Amino acid sequence: MIKIGIVDDEILARKVIEEYCSKIDNLELVLSTGNPLEFINFTQQNEVDLIFLDIEMPELNGMEILRSMINPPKVILTTAYSEYALESYNYGVVDYLLKPVKFERFLKAINKVSASIITQPKKNSSSEELQIKHDGMPVNISFKSILYIQSFGNYLKIFTDSRMYLIPETLINITTLLSENFQRTHKSYISNLDRVSKATRTYLLIENNKVPISAMYKVIVFKKLEVLAKL
Image (spheres, one colour):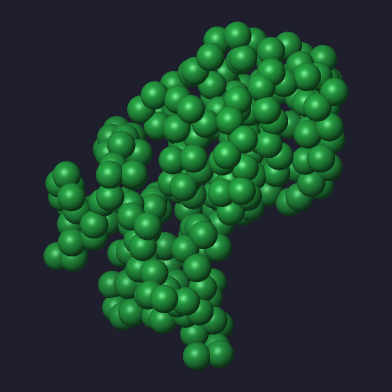
């Protein structure tokens, strides 16, 4: 079964996708909401394989959600606006449906992604290490030891308790290797939220390091910190 989430503030648009999902046996609808923050909280505790994501929504729009997510599920955008299509593919979006969505087009999008979701092995969520190559040698870094990661041109600086590693990689690519406790806080930074000792409106304090928070990620960062505090 493919676990489906729908995030769209238009009730009628959600109902259409819900109805389409009900017609296909291997789709299981696990969440349908108009509240992006509810979706973010839900994914902290539940598995979602594929989301139908609207772009224009209050509080957080679809693109902001995409920019902020660590290890996102497959994404099919559903929107009345076509101007976001090019940017969306930078975040691994597998299809782009213009409203009103017809069933034939919905089915084509499902067929496009269902095989890869079913056959792709699940990421080992119990993994507790980041595997990198540093100076040509394989290195395993404990997630718990990572403080934050900073983009540095075509490289990344990985700051840990003991040292800093400089590797040729991008923030977008490395997010697929990190656990859910890591969060993009700025266009140039990913932070380990488990290591945050203080949060202000403009930065997170992690072991005496001030890691910036930009307006784009502020709502998601503080929501995730609230969730972690309750665990």
